[in-house]
Length: 84
Image 1: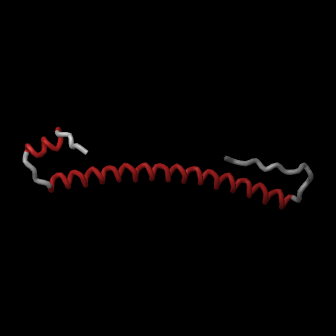
Image 2: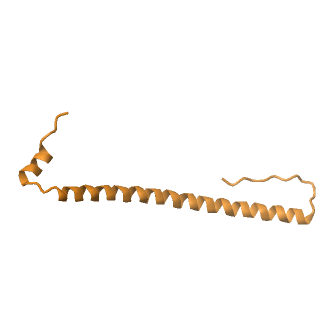
Image 3: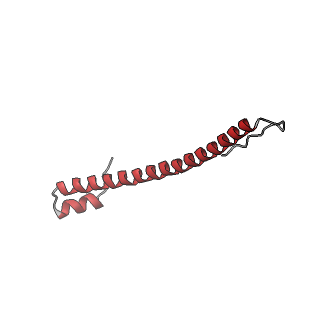
């Protein structure tokens, strides 16, 4: 991701060359931070997906507990295919 900045071989004032070197170092540092943050965002999105799935499962379990059904009703819900 890092870009190499080519400079002319002509001599530049020392102050300008120093500023350019500092700028290049800062750009590399910022690119490294961007890569780390991108990976943190990706992990966060993965965690959010997993938590959303767990929440959905929990909601389904709560709904199932609310529906007090007989054993026969539960077996029918599992084994009998609903027609469209």
